[in-house]
Amino acid sequence: MKEEERLLFRASGTGHRWMGRAHRFGDDINTDYIISGRYKFKTLDLKELARHIMEDISPDFYKRLKPGDFIVAGKNFGCGSSREQAPLALKSAGVGAVLARSFARIFFRNSINTGLALVECDTEKIKEGDLLEIDLKKGIVFDHTAGITLQVQPMPQFILRIFNAGGLVKYFKRYGGFR
Image 1 (tube, rainbow, N blue to C red):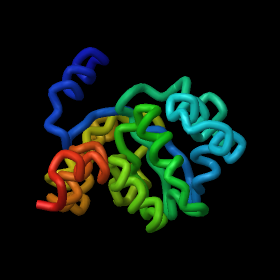
Image 2: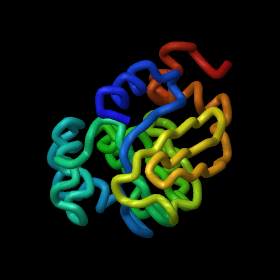
Image 3: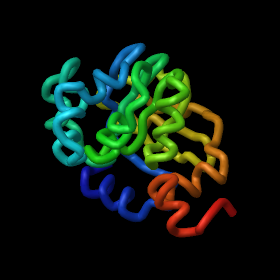
Image 4: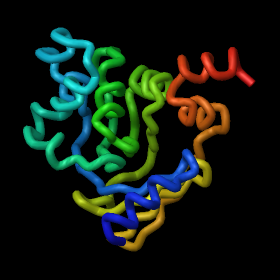
């Protein structure tokens, strides 16, 4: 799929389906790796924080990241401190979703609350640079590069609604409560 087609696909997405490239990371990626403490205490500007995501383990990551690309990791992604800056910085940088074998629970909740999509699945076969298509509603991750389909737990409707609204605060502003 050409880059223009990929962007058109994303632009015409339904709010639960995206395509992007995989960027691989290992196990136990903590929130200080996601956004270093030397930045998260200096500014609340999400665009500035976004420029520094994953910098301590992949210095040029932000430059390689294209809008809608995916972070693919091992187990316990988002462990460590519970600061909301981590999922907010990833979302602000344009990360389409994070796929991992498992997530730290507080990071998982913070990501839902801030509108960052997470997919818990076996990520072992996904390689750096693979072109992935994710459908959160159906629970499918299709790796176009490897030609494999991963079945994952579909995202529950109430979480999809929060995610599609842009996060929990935006959901409440729009609907005034849970529906």
